[in-house]
Amino acid sequence: MAILRAQEIREMSISEMKEKLMELKRELLKEYTNKATSGSPSNPGRMREIRRTIARIYTIMNEKRYKKQ
Image 1 (spheres, rainbow, N blue to C red):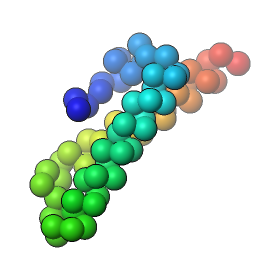
Image 2 (image 1 turned 90 degrees about the vertical axis):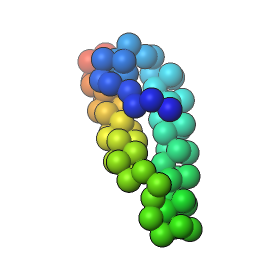
Image 3 (image 1 turned 120 degrees about the vertical axis):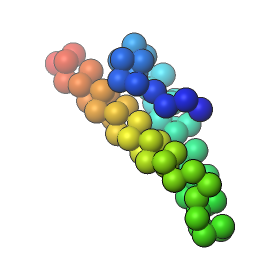
């Protein structure tokens, strides 16, 4: 899965963001389990990028939510 940039996320609807968020959380969980079982992650930078993308999605969702009010 490619890491999403802020502009790409802003073009999504809230429901699309929620779907992408669930995908990313599942992928992060897989990375954590791989790290726990093998001792070291196969790609440590990937975990960081997934966490950052999740944070980006939450931030933009909040921006859209408060913009509507």
